[in-house]
Amino acid sequence: MTLESIREKVTEKVIGNDAWLNKLDHSNPGHYGVNDHGIDLSSDDVFVNIPQRSFEFKNANFRFNLNLMSSTNGYSHKGMKVANGKGTFRFSEMNGEQIEIDDLEIEVDLDLMADDL
Image 1 (cartoon, rainbow, N blue to C red):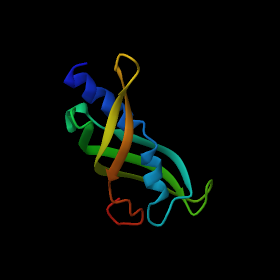
Image 2 (image 1 turned 60 degrees about the horizontal axis):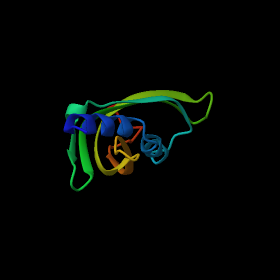
Image 3 (image 1 turned 135 degrees about the vertical axis):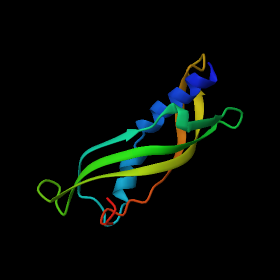
Image 4 (image 1 turned 45 degrees about the vertical axis):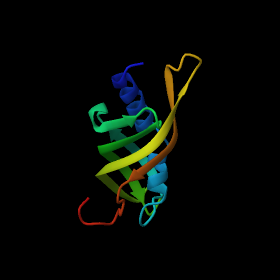
């Protein structure tokens, strides 16, 4: 597997990771209902260390649409924050052509009541 394909696979796994929803669960003041969320991350912003099976990323756009105060009819809140992060990965499958994320730490300030959203 080439370095570029490893970066692309790590990027795909980071984008699809449940850690993003977990960040919303621990936001301030806490969310009550997620209508939608998405992550935009270029593989150009993902840096991998193959021998240590680690990676870092920067400039991920974390978009979300939430209902605050109620899971269905509360205050609708759309936002976008830029996130950075790091983690570890492993090669899976017998031929090592797949990648799994073992650990993902996302660095983003999710104060949903802040004025800059």
